[in-house]
Length: 264
Image 1 (cartoon, rainbow, N blue to C red):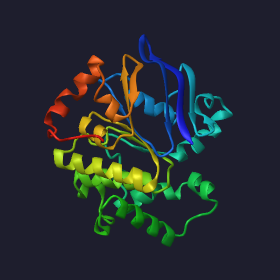
Image 2 (image 1 turned 60 degrees about the vertical axis):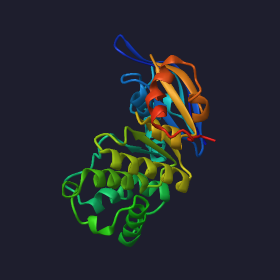
Image 3 (image 1 turned 30 degrees about the vertical axis):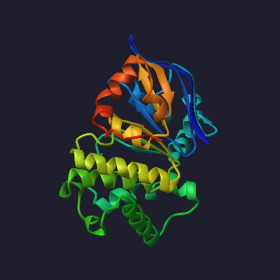
Image 4 (image 1 turned 90 degrees about the horizontal axis):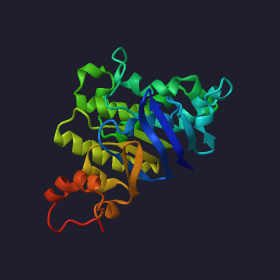
């Protein structure tokens, strides 16, 4: 099981966003995608779930070639790809008209999920799943009857993560998951991402500007620049890179770490 890009190109008008991007994320790995704004990080995630069609190249999610599913017949398979992928957006994107409970349960009530598991869940089974995912994101059941606007932004982020986890995805995709959070909440969410990735043994791809988090939890770090893969390597290799942009990205972060800090 893996996610694989093979020589992928994508442009919007005259602007080239992905320029021959190739990489592979293997089962259970945590991959951070870093780079300056506008370098194609979020566009990469959208290609994985079939929101965007590449201009050229191939994209695989497990045995599905996502890049070939943009035909009338192929679109019928896109829901199966998306069932494998759980997307956590920059903002919680919760439905304000639903309680936190119903937001988390939302994906468990869809026809696609019923088809995936081969049955309709009972209300007791839905409640048990919601409570299980709530524990995974370290929230108390007392928030479940409340609506998103009745809890803090940080709690909304966790509710959003619980909603993503509920249908049991194989891949977790995070698009700037700590946007809008204070430093303490940012650290907490980063620790949660690491914990979930290891505990659930899922593959995680994280678009972020948090260098310290990338160094602490990533198995691989992928740098995008001008639409190309500048570097893909484990953190201990990345911090020794002599590539100017890579050194610039980590210079401040490394200067703030204690003298005895080590990735070993």
